[in-house]
Image (cartoon, rainbow, N blue to C red; front, side, top):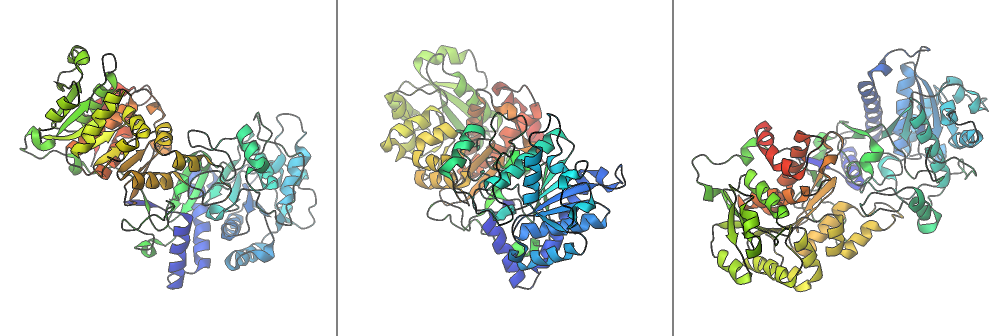
Length: 614
């Protein structure tokens, strides 16, 4: 079991450990800084060696909270290793929390701290330079002289920093960032794109909501991923209030936008090459725009493991009344054990279940055939395609190990369902949208068998409140974003709204609410697939980083997923477990095949995937 935490859960965990005397806040801050330095040297081993001029350089952007305190620790540790370090503070030193202020004072014994307004001044001063010149924030990181109080002209410094450390907000951000900060972000992004400078985020990239992965203040596309450009401009021009600017960072006119971008609106969030988080990953690392902004994620142990037991909520916890997580812990889907999916030795096929998949009419049976193949490959003992008369010949020519049964109408289906050996059904892929198709869905739901509803079945549910009311706990719904919006328009609207404050409404929040309303398991598809049960249990399968499978964006891939869930239901897995396993196996099949995978290939990878389990 791998948990991912909300910002509130992480704060509660730290507070509990400190209250028990297990650790002090200052110790946690020191360990966090050490973890960041260790991750940098592991990810970029060349930084452990002497640079071309005898040392490496780093610019550290520190914020007004404990994340900024982590940054001061990193600055001190890197300086002790011979790095040239420049530190900038957003906010007033006198308002820093006690532990952060203590590390600020420790750093002052080594170097100085400049107000972040200096970075804005350099950005604006160089904005009109010739194309290809990328000094900007780079001029702020090459010399230890930069930190001296008498250094009035940062732009006079030469070179670019090897690293830029984002220690501005971490998980503590609750409002959209103001324009001056976004101007700094524009400089950092331009520098990152045009030079070898790398960006490291402490805990999470600034601008992101740690609970939802959404960019605070940015509009959201239909895919659920925050937009940039024109929609971001619209959001920043009045839809979302700006966070108050500290006295040392006033708005500056004429700051540059992102290098090469069509819009001159500066980014609302930083993008990092490496993000170092602590104890557990946060929900926002995997959701929405989080993966795109956080780069490679490293989760470091800072000694909180013992304090974690029983302190972050568990399966018995409940989502709050508005659907947001509260004490309920989100869990990552992990590889299943081989034993879980093995078949019982000596058992006959009916002990492994019989799945029935209903097809559409002539010329529309391909989706159901893909689902049936998936159900058979995942281990259902038998799989039957229920076919309308006009499509019988078409289907008969395409199948061998899958059986065929004529299903002309509701009475025919009800007759077939008298066979108690049929343990799960799949409806929707290519089914059709006529009233008679809705009647078939109703007949299945009234039978109270385990069932997977996808595609056309979801559209039929969205059209008919009486049909929706027939849903029960043995059902799994597998909507993509468009289908989710049709089924749960009010919930989807909350996901599309600009996030004017944090924690923002998240995909897990939405999926939990949907599952509770439907009274069944909901698998909300996407690169950040979220699976929730009516009781609030929730899992996340993030197809990002090493598990990215962009080739799954192909016709029919979702039909195979439907078949995997159906086959697991037929084998007797409870709905939440079936959906969780199917999500992992589906992506793993695409990863095993690799680029060029099409829907027909997916189920055929299951023997290799299952054999590789341990």
